[in-house]
Image 1 (cartoon, rainbow, N blue to C red):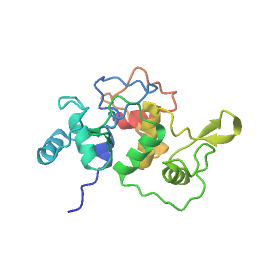
Image 2 (cartoon, rainbow, N blue to C red):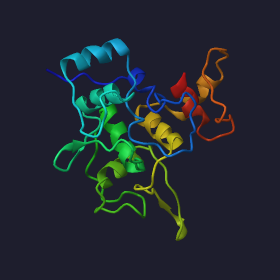
Image 3 (cartoon, helix red, strand yellow):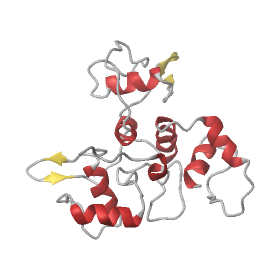
Length: 212
């Protein structure tokens, strides 16, 4: 049977299903945070049928059920070094979060590009095709390279922040900056806000959209 796909509604809570109710958008984002916070009833039913345990993940960990669902959906994978591990405390890189977003959205990669568009992402990088595709589709942006401000770098192996991860996930799932901005104009006292996310911050529209 065809595997159930994740919806935009399912992924809205990615990165916000943290043990801490407040979000620090500039802290390093560990790979347990994109644990796909979906409906409890649906998740419990799914995991009653099928579960996966990593040897380094406590079955009582707050993220364990979400991690199990994400694994079964093919969004995340583990490491095999005699036993399967997930390494939940390891920071995730920018390329890794982009890959998880692609898998969750069912986004296809076009392997035809010969140029990633970034000086620091060559054909020998494991995420070359992924990054080249995302840049071609306008889903990611680079920054001036430290050695040459005239060229763009993606820094694929740099630890991703929560803010960077939110933006990449939102764009991969088809949330345009304009759509994120539109939500801000909605007057609703019930909308969730964070004391460390200001309206002047570049990531404000994406955090606000994901939270609400």
